[in-house]
Length: 310
Image (cartoon, rainbow, N blue to C red; front, side, top):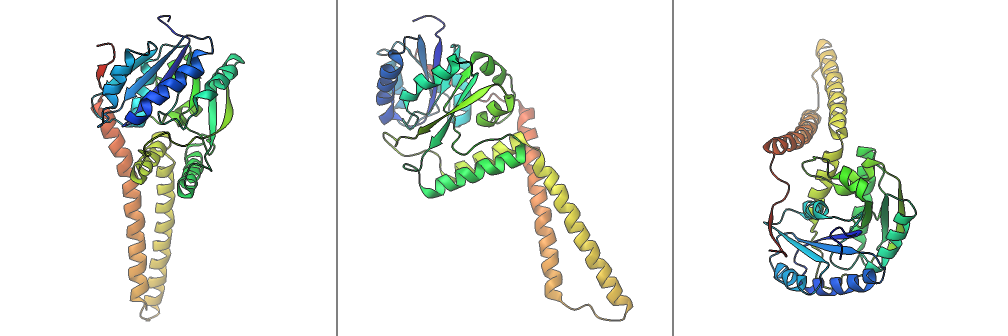
């Protein structure tokens, strides 16, 4: 294999011991027949099972395999970023390690790249393999993300895509604290196309994305790409201030008339509402300040502990 392969396939993995062997065999079968030089980069994101031990073992069997172990669990996006930073190819494909992203689609991604697309996205049809709740919340996230960020993203978008080397070089220049790669790729604006596909069932194991992880992922993605929540906070502040002002005018008018202002319950309710809005705005501001704090610490986004060549 050439020192600089044409194709790099980057796959972050976390506790995927039961999938790794099957994954590499499928990649070997599907990519090995395409007559292109390639490498597969597996990034172990701090697995607690023997995923890394298996990667090191298979690294001796599959000459195209390069493995890297992160010092701890840095999260899917950071593990993916680590793999992309190590990729040497002219075309770089990122995908998951659970075989829901079919390796058979790689030839179609390469075909679109050959036709001139610098970014080849995929759009997932997972109606047969994903529960209704996950499909609904995923669709809701992309609608909310597109609204807040003005970066259009379609339902079914994932990190299964091909990037040209030119695009990847520009992507790696971004210094976001918590880089949301799907949004960042769309934000770059290079010529792209999209290939639909049917998602496969996980070959083995369960999804590592819990509900809390998905919520944190969504929150970080929106804050990373948009200041609209702050603008909305200003709007809420103005509206609630006007409501309070009109309430004060009403109280003064009633007082000058010599009438007692009725409705302690309504007064307490309005005060509670105003304080609720205030705390929401403070929470939004706090989230942005927290990101500034993390950015100023200037900590690395990932740390590599081991690799298959050592």
